[in-house]
Length: 500
Image (cartoon, rainbow, N blue to C red; front, side):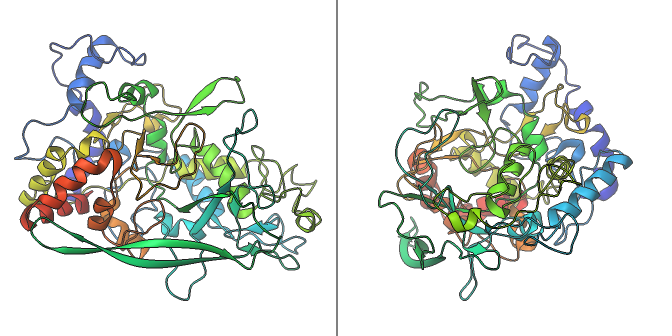
């Protein structure tokens, strides 16, 4: 699509697409307290599923609304700022980018304000896991894991305000690196076996089944009832826009008892809110375990890198009381810089950067094969969970994110994905079989940005077809529908996904 057209569309996207005549439906979206009755009707019409798949929908090529990155698509496609932020905010974004890429070092160090790494850690920088702001992947043969790690917990009721009970010695995640002079928690090994799936036309597809092992444990035996959940780093684009979705739109899509009988439930992730003592809606993380991008970033600083911030002020990261050697190591706190290893405005700038990584424009939205694949996507029921579009809140914190028509392909809800994908590790109110619907925007650029394809929470799927075939539980019917398609229709659906 010509860039001139996209440039114009970036500025007109929302206004034009919402400039539809109000009609029957004035009572739509009553939860949208940020909109006038007239706007509610317009928004309801814009976000409705299409009835015609013979042509692209208006502004479908702009998945991030006016914030969409519309220039040349290349290996850096996930690393550009929202297209509609000011020059001053572009400068904040650039500083945040520097902090996102910063390599932290152990303490003490001759560097100023770069020490405090660990003492136990999984990566030395945010970029180390989020490769070029894209997805992480499991280690290749001979590689040590960086963008893949294991969450840990034990069964039982968590303490008030907590999401789970940590493993008593190893804490909430398994860290396979440590600063000099300290033992790591051990080695993470991943082995795969193959299993075959036969599609309706006789095509054989091989799926790899992962087996995770923790060896060379540095701090003694692990609890025999430890619960383990593997995770790869997700892509970073569009997070601020997801945060700008009105909570009522997410809750309106929930159907926990499947009252409409379509086989799809969808539950909100509810998290304890320390500020109010009540609960708050979880939006981020593989199980919706973080309410905001800032909370997710602070958690990653603490758990993945071992850097304290104002929101997570413990300089020892995930070290537990049982790991006395870890707690005896020096920290990176410096009184002249602030009370934490990452004092203000480090977290603020990384949060701003993370919320403004732009979603790239779609490609080939009006290609006949892409449109046919889009029709299959809806016909098979994929859109029931991978909800195509929202209009963000007029009350969103950042002006650039307000009242944008966006296309994330996620309902932001928890769904039972079946035994094949289950980690059997409950987290907050998410069961061991539930995962938050992963947004699909940008998924077609995974190989270009990350250097290889790897999908799902642990990167086990090497192709989009494998990812579809791993769907079970509430996704079983859509998965079976895909498997029953002939080759032409399967290729069309995959081509549509590649266009996102």
